[in-house]
Length: 464
Image (cartoon, rainbow, N blue to C red):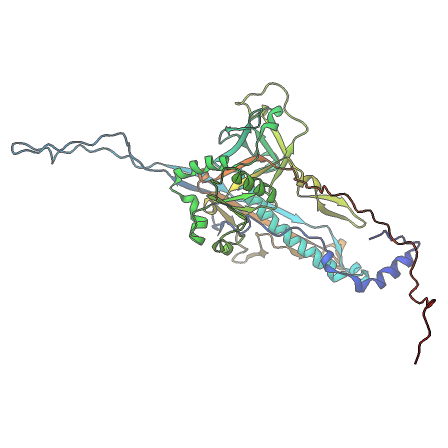
């Protein structure tokens, strides 16, 4: 649409009065709604009348020594050791305790003059857009909280390195990077805006794309866990597939072509079994032992501009390379206020995190609503992020014409077993296959003389 220039406020007012019927709510900008984490995990209410920290236990695995030999049975008419006892002692499986705590976050909007809405062109639409944006913010807060805890508390954080000739030389190790935690000024939780990688800053270019070989290494590790990882998709569809969540179709396509180049060993399908369509988020691609879905809000990163100086020491995280998160949306100033627009750097980011999703590995705890006890009552408090309108009876608001929205969160994430969670830091494929045409362009000359369709010259008389 071309820029419209107004020479006076009267012209502007006239334009908006006449433009009322052209308002189209399809042009209202919204956040993406598809969420990989929002509905995947079990949710429990935080127990009331307890502290803000809970203690839980992880039970260890029992086993025996497979190298211990059997004993012969010596039984004759004269003697027997059949009733003798030579028992092997089996130790009781051990346990370990851990804690998880309730964290809080509060939000509020700026003040809104309700009376001024009486003079606005689209007052109802403007407020509905505001309220819908708040609701989507709530959903994103839950999603980001779960994503940060699932990745941050993962027991296996993999990264692949390539050699100078570009070949895959195996995973670095399963603790090759970590997400730092907030600790300053009474803050807490995982800071998913920063990643520290156990490589020298100059070696970040050696980080490989996500590959089927990397997934196989994680799959072999997961087989130590009695196939617990297969329960999510197997219970729903009966298909023994590991659920892999990747950032976007480019990663899936690269894996698909990698599978096809493997001499047809992999069963790579661009579509999926009908049984998979019953899953909440569906499955976009099936390759071998893996079902792939997309996390369109996946955390993506670029190398931090300020890298550690000095010699790299694998035992000292202060010397490790640092990645910083590239936000999905970025704030820009508009004619009236600010808005968030898609960040082009997000699509072109260098690194991303994919995960092997095991729904049973984590539980989300939410503080239930409360009003108080006995005569000590308060306004009903919602701790799940429900936005409430407030226009307090203050001296500065004596007519109560102004107000704001506010929301609060009380959330906790309990990772039952970190060893079930495998996450992968990898490069994002950005190469594009462009196909041109070898045919020359047409030599076309548009007509220059108009054709007169009403010229009767040379046409004989009509004989009746």
